[in-house]
Length: 303
Ligand code: 13P
Ligand code: SF4
View (tube, rainbow, N blue to C red):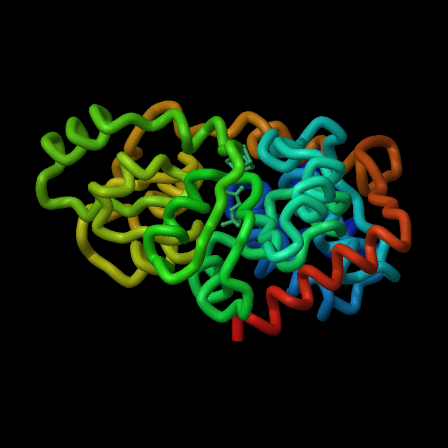
């Protein structure tokens, strides 16, 4: 009898003691066979606690790198080589070092959506759910926030006592949403709560009922019986529709589809597990240790 791809993956997981991690933006068939699912931060922390020595990270490259930074003894596999987040390389490590040299009184805050090389030259990492808290808790008053100008300006607006300089990066998917789309969605669904990711532009965020990370948006919608307009990647609306078919979830904009997050398939995962595709993440040990320092600082300041 022909076995499905899911069955083959589940069997190979057991035979080879492999864990599968899947970001919440992955497709439902991948989320179903994952040992852990969640946002990028939750996944990397979960990976540290897994007994399996091999981890397949279904998401984009910076997520697999973060797992490797925190769990260097594990073999970390990214199933599709081309799955990268364009925001992760919108500033070079050299440019960060130059800024630090010119501005010794500044600390550099890096969104977790950055390469390991970038994290290694920054002072602290943040995630979309922890950014406000961490920046508030930092001793430094002067901060360069990289690379996302949208998350950075959301932090700047909410932590007014800090002097925050923004880099001109952004997520091309979230940044594409316009004010006109918000007004149209609010008019079409006047009773729905508008839930928005802070990677959306500031002029759009003003219409939000709730601003939060992927995990925050999922949590809010799961606990609520209200209709919701989802202002983040389409997969979150799809997941909610499957979980709560009685509720109405409307996507804020048709453009909210990340090609890099959607590229991975069950077939890619199976191939990667067999050693026939994908990338095994290798990091220079000095870069890994320096990047870990910025992540450890995120954990310390986020408490
Ligand atoms: P999270 O940090 O919420 O997992 O989001 C990652 C991301 O790429 C959002 O676009
Ligand atoms: Fe990167 Fe945006 Fe895709 Fe998230 S949605 S992985 S930030 S391009």
